[in-house]
Length: 193
Image 1 (cartoon, rainbow, N blue to C red):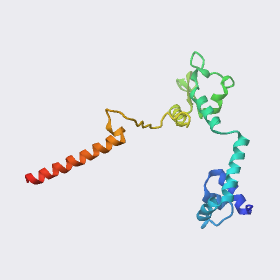
Image 2 (image 1 turned 90 degrees about the horizontal axis):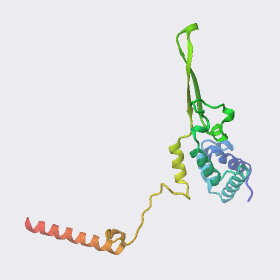
Image 3 (image 1 turned 180 degrees about the vertical axis):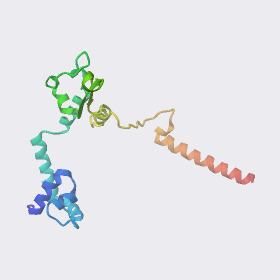
Image 4 (image 1 turned 90 degrees about the vertical axis):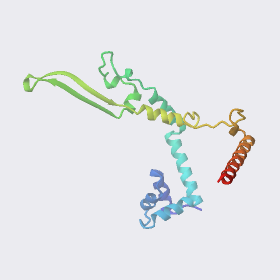
């Protein structure tokens, strides 16, 4: 079944922010019913198919996939401040910076420092602040990449003689013994009272 006018617009708008309610409003549905209509639209197989196809086309068109993202994260991880600084700690001209630096810094503040006042003042230096990507957050994102899995909690189950809980049969026996001990202790305390 082909999509109708508002449904086509809904698919296009949904891809902008993945917000079904807002997509429904932007597609021309009533703001009062947009939440339920957006939800209903996402359940329709033909709309699901159209969204999936549009997402796949966008990935092909932009060539942005998991490999692209991982490559960019690695580039950020390997950014070295020596690439943009001279030996005297002054900044190189921006035209000499590697592209990675020009693409990923999010701020550059320059401030001239002076000594004295008015016409008698002399410049004594520069204060430069560079805001570059958060390296810890970047490493976290790298670590969460599915093929690396550095931050996944792993539980190894096996037959460890030092830990009976790793053997289901031994664990069951241990729990059974603990229950019997607790019952016997309660019976003894009751008899002593």
